[in-house]
Image (tube, rainbow, N blue to C red; front, side, top):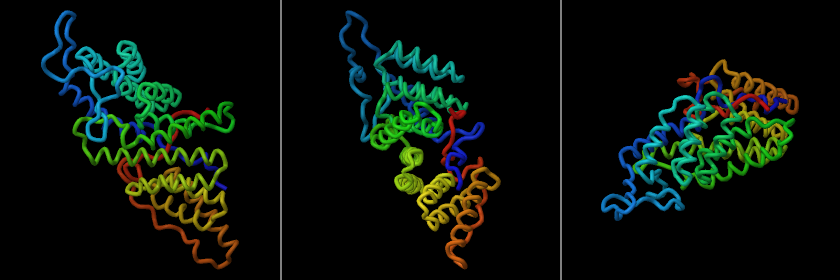
Length: 335
């Protein structure tokens, strides 16, 4: 039987993770909004309150909400300037240092999480899973309801945890907890510009839902709960049906295979082959799974006609991706 941990993971080489793509869309818009709508300057000592602009937000209050989402906002010109300086860093280590320096200077700022997410994404592109988890956890500590770092930490933990890890169960538990939190907060936890692109936001939410259910499925697989894994993988597929992911179908097929539901497993494997870019590891493994299941079904039902291969693989999408969502993948070397 195909080892589910051998299924190719989301990112290879310089390909960006789904989370990085989400954040690149959302954070760029947030920065543009912040620059165009600076918070009023804090009055100097001895002066009366400012007579124009919106009063600075209470440091203990969450980011202000507009409609059904939260808006990222600086509380002073000094804070905004420091944020703008921090986002000029193009190196992951420098971005991390800038985020930590900003957080030390403005411990109540709503912008802290955005800077940690930015550094986290840079490390994700560099395949540094330990740093992704570290920066993601700091982003979550700064903003516990933002689904972007919740999903990223959950995904990275699920993808890099191995049976030999001494803290395996703690890592799986954290991954599941963060994935559930991402799902719980996907509609209200995102920090967005004042007038966001509704299509981009809807796409980001779908991706968060798909990836969060994928994490829950992977955690269930690691715990040998194949029925729960199949349910979660199917929910992920349903959420991302407009951009089907070959690897998610392959994971579903393995879960169904473990349950000895060979016909359903074959149908999932057929779809994995269909949506895999030609010549990729995902397609190779999908074909192996497909052939295995065909043989099992034929052995159990000689002359069965239901074990037919799926349709030919379509022309690969630009960038080698089957749809706009990158394949679920590994953030760094296995532990």
